[in-house]
Amino acid sequence: MAANATAVPQAYQAYTSAAVPDWLNKGDNAWQMTSATLVGLQSVPGLVLLYGGIVKKKWAVNSAFMALYAFAAVVLCWVIWAYKMSFGEKLLPLWGKAGPALGQKFLIKQAALPSTVHHFHDGTVETAAATPYYPMASMVWFQCVFAAITLILLAGSLLGRMNIKAWMMFVPLWLTFSYTVGAFSLWGGGFLFHWGVIDYSGGYVIHLSSGIAGITAAYWVGPRTKVDRERFPPNNVLLMLAGAGLLWMGWAGFNGGDPYSANIDSSMAVLNTNICAATSLLVWTWLDVIFFNKPSVIGAVQGMITGLVCITPGAGVVQGWAAIIMGILSGSIPWFTMMILHKKWWLLQTIDDTLGVFHTHAVAGYLGGILTGLFAEPVLCSLFLPVTNSRGGVYGGVGGMQILKQIVGGGFIIGWNVVVTSIICVLIGFVVPLRMPEEELLIGDDAVHGEEAYALWGDGEKYDSTKHGGASDEQTPQQNVSTGATQVV
Image (tube, rainbow, N blue to C red; front, side):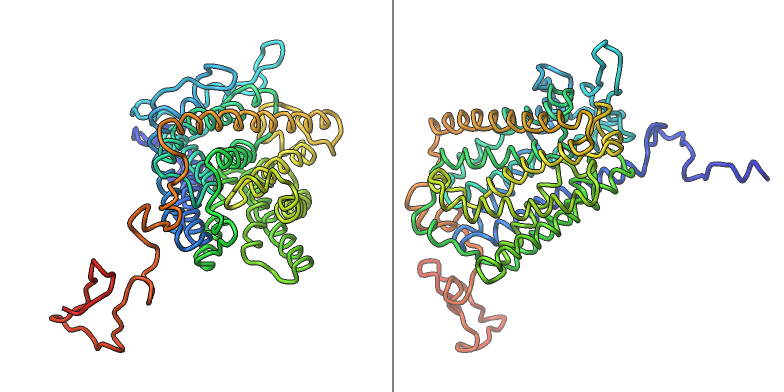
């Protein structure tokens, strides 16, 4: 009877099937695949909808398509060469060795990040390499959707004028020469990882890099038309909100999946994410009401995003009260840079950053990284970081050094992205123009894609059944190709 009481339930017993090896934790694997799917949904359809709704009507299709194309292109590049450049064997202190992640033997073995084993100064192992309890296939896909959303966020700076052919070239080049460097340096076992820079889930790798690369690429591509810069109203605020909602809820996978396990740190990260996002949204909205006398829906979405971005580098290593402070600062500092500083600084006025990605991602991401260096809690750090005894500045000891590490780590990401993004844009410019021709800029989607987002009365569809009668099976409305009008035949 005692034996029965202590017996392992059948569902948790080891199976002889090769599909369920001894090292596989089904809960961790299920959560990792769910997290990856949530992050994927942030991009498709999340940012596809957000971009399609927040821009001027004539750019709705083009903006949504830039996001969709980037997602698909990154997936293919990732599995052919970029994953191992980001998380494989070390080639350089900032780069892994390129190679495919496509073979069955590689993808079904236990996940491992070989370059993440961390040593003491005397050469002994301080922290073993990360070996999550699920297959490499889950790890490859989880990291892939992070790479994809980075390119899509970057695209927000370039909407409304970038040549789609130039964008098609830009995506694989930037992924290869910029994203993989940041990912390996901070996550995959590069020099910043081993130095102890904290980037829990991409405040630097994803948000700081996309914001800096976005404004850099915007400089090289050039501005939108004068008319579009002066008036660029969203064509569908409700569609934008639907995309924003997917972005917010999907962040549970974004930050909750980064411990590589369904553990207590994952739960902490998800809760902190929502605390900071909600606080930031409220603070941004309050500032809009105080200074402009009305709440802005677009402003609320911007505040939501800055809160999500700011908490990302420290989601699982700060306490809940720190998440509130980070939300207050992420709802106010990026608000100030976007609403006040942007209008006064000639450099920001010169560069046309369509959706203000510099403010919502670069400023908020760097702010979050520095605040992580201030508030990182020692016990939570021990659950996640390879460098033992890590802590934020408010906890004394080596905490002051952690703030310095965060500043230097962010500085490296900024410098690398400015230089590499500039080189990529200049090289592409030798092959195809970075900016659309003026005739396409004046017309928009119809000229670029031959498609428009909406067929509204008086704007495409001309047939009015209330005036001309209902159409029977023999009498149906068809569009006259030459005039765009609909006639009954």
